Image 1 (tube, rainbow, N blue to C red):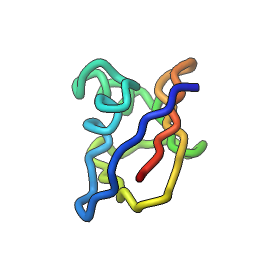
Image 2: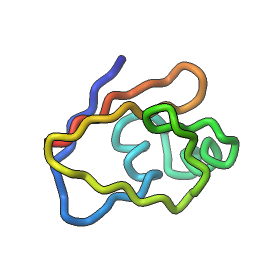
Image 3: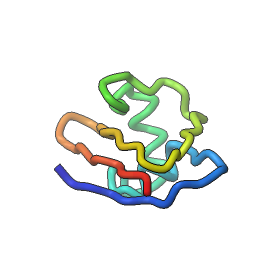
Length: 77
């Protein structure tokens, strides 16, 4: 499983940007298509909201799933 490290931020990040930065999707448009197709999950929970914002709290980790085979462990530092 790939790992992606990102710095903690007081501002939430949009799920599409996070997917692109982590390498789970080649573009934000593809990220939107994957979300619309119910192919995206965070820690086993399906993501249905294309506008979802994720809080990046220091020390947290979670698994981002895109499609059937792409998994990325996101580590917030």
